[in-house]
Amino acid sequence: SYIEMEKRLKIWIYKEGEPPMFHEGPCGNIYSIEGQFISEMDENGPFVTRNPEEALVYFLPFSVVRMVGFVYEKGSLDRQSLPDITSDYIQVISAKYPYWNRTHGADHFMLSCHDW
Image 1 (tube, rainbow, N blue to C red):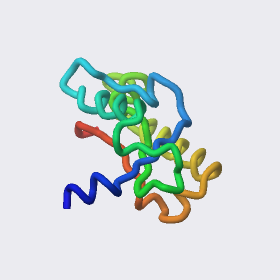
Image 2 (cartoon, rainbow, N blue to C red; image 1 turned 120 degrees about the horizontal axis):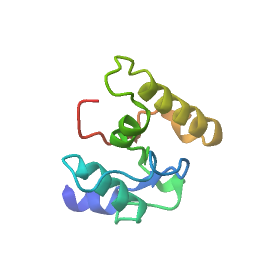
Image 3 (cartoon, rainbow, N blue to C red; image 1 turned 90 degrees about the vertical axis):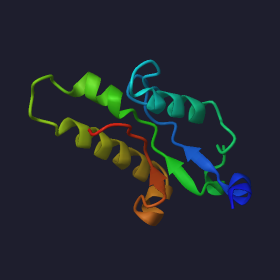
């Protein structure tokens, strides 16, 4: 039930990464839900835990909108930089923490509000 979910859902947010591509997203355009969600997660919303052992899911706090804005060259057909950044981030967290490795990322999530 929703009430039970409110009691049990715990999300842990990785602290690695720096703005503008991590822990920050757009808040004033058509993709603003991405920025709002990241902001609310980083501000310790009601489902956020500070103890990763309590978490049921783990949030990867990168902004796809910001990645596109900072690393994608307009007009280029090469989009490899986006999966490269994601893969590098996962390598960092999987080397530092056991959580990704326990489930191969099955209990991890990211937010992307568009088709990139």
